[in-house]
Amino acid sequence: METLPGRAGETTLRAAPETGTKSLGAERERRVSSRKPRNAGPEEWRARGPRSAERRVEPLLRSTTTTQLQQHNSCHDQKKAELRARDAPFMRGRARTRGRFTMADDFEDDIVHFSVDDLAVKGFGVMEEIRRQGKLCDVTLRVGEHKYSAHRVVLAASIPYFHAMFTTDMAESKREEIVMQGTDPRLHPKNVLGVRSFAEAMMCPALYDTANSFLQQHFVETSTGEEFLGLPGEELLELAARDELHVEGEEQVFEAMLAWVRRDREGRAPLLPDLLTCVRLPLCRPHFLTDRVQQDELIRACHKCRDLLDEAKDYHLMPDRRPVLPAYKTRPRCCTSLAGRVYAVGGLNSAGDAVTMVEVYDPLTNRWEACCPMGSPRSRVGVAVLGGRLYAVGGSDGQERLSSVEVYDPDTNTWTKVASMNSKRSAMGVAVLDGQIYVCGGYDGVSSLSSVECYSSEADKWTMVTAMNSPRSATGVAFFEGRVYVTGGHDGLQIFSTVEYYNPHTGSWHKAAPMQQRRCRHGAAALSGRLYAVGGYTGSAFLSSVETYDTASDQWSALMPMLARRSRVALAACSGRLYALGGYDGYANLGTVECFTPESNTWRQAAQMSWHTGGVGAGCLPFLTM
Image 1 (cartoon, rainbow, N blue to C red):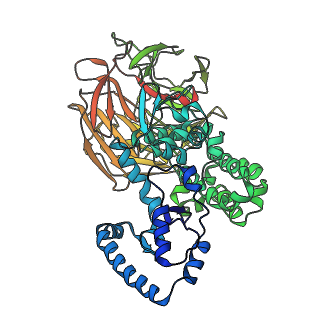
Image 2: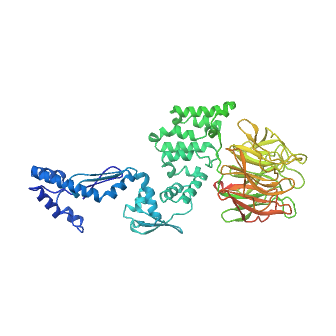
């Protein structure tokens, strides 16, 4: 039998033709006697002569009489019936694969045509199931201490690196186990897309999810590499649309899209309007829109792209039209699963005095280390992370409330003073929105405040913005879904369960669904599309309870409580987890720390702080910016 080329997923088999004979019977006798022995080698088989269908069929027809043809047809019909009976189970099975099976004349040496239309769709799934059963695997890959059994042909078909390895004379092409020399099992911006492809080919969901998370956290560095520039268009569109990309501004996403298009301008330019739709142009700085986007030749040559640019410019020129824009175009991205380190800032010592101490926690090692102390002692301090730096805002030094602010630079391991707030505040809430720090409410030493002010690091200036609907001290504040949410707190007379949020597009405050439990002195943070409120104080009880808010349903729901009651607790999101630091349980200030895993709705103890026992502020500096 000879294998003939066919369409994808098809195999055609044809009997090897022979030279002409005198009669049909003699032709059959010659074919049987010349059929390839089972142990014949390729040289011996090729030496039997040319195999041409024309050379076989034409003399056969010339030497066949009518009677012989009738005998042949009768015998052929009988043989076909036998073949059908023999292959009935197989033919029933083909219906499940939507295949086709045809037989031409000439019995077992006829042409056989079989195809599977959905081979490309189902093939890899079947191969993965075979691999999981440990069958037909012909190579093992060892990366560090990890081993992966695999099929060479699947790796070669999926990843160019393995195609080159297995289809050349490299020594690895014949080894049963291949040590990936020089391969760091840890992810890196230069290899994350390749690792993700490898995980997909090997059907390793855990590794695939890890690579995806890393890709989101390190999008900017990854976008400059060769792997990124070689991405298929549909994969890039899906990536560019993600809310979870960690970028300092949409300008970085724009530059990544343009770099990808320029790699193959002729072939990729038609995708530019779709890619630009994924870039949240209204969030770009006005000067960038006019000086960079508007002047780019690719943008100027595309009518749809110019329309998107005009829409972004209108966003800045006509604020009253902002509410009509689709929400996704003006919603800042927020990578809440950032891998980084948690900083515990200020707070109280065992004697109850405000401290300058700062310590840092590494989730990978579960250890706390001392860090450069602040210039001023601060308890009940607000903490914010902006531009890869850590801000300590206001608080109390034990004598008075503070308006001063200082910023920590991890590159130089130093604190520097910046502009002070317009008001003295402690026990206030702090959040970062659109590249600016918002400080909400607090206590000035006389009364609870409703005022809100906003800090621009570029101008080093604080500006008053619209005040909250209610005065709130000891409130929980967090950036969530493109807004600043303020939860609970008190006004000196009552403790609230109410919630309000600030819309930067309208410059106004709006009510949201109240929490299930009134609370003040609690922690608030956003993680993975949810807003969390943990611990606090009701006026009569210290809380361990936790609840979470969903904007789609506008409802709060209870979660697993913490292991300890915590008032004046600090809450930080880091590496896909929530960390609750310190607090007061009604008897003593706490230096203990708990970690919450959203997927399992569980709390566990983390390493205890070394120098802090309560009133601490917390923030997460991602590794990306360190």
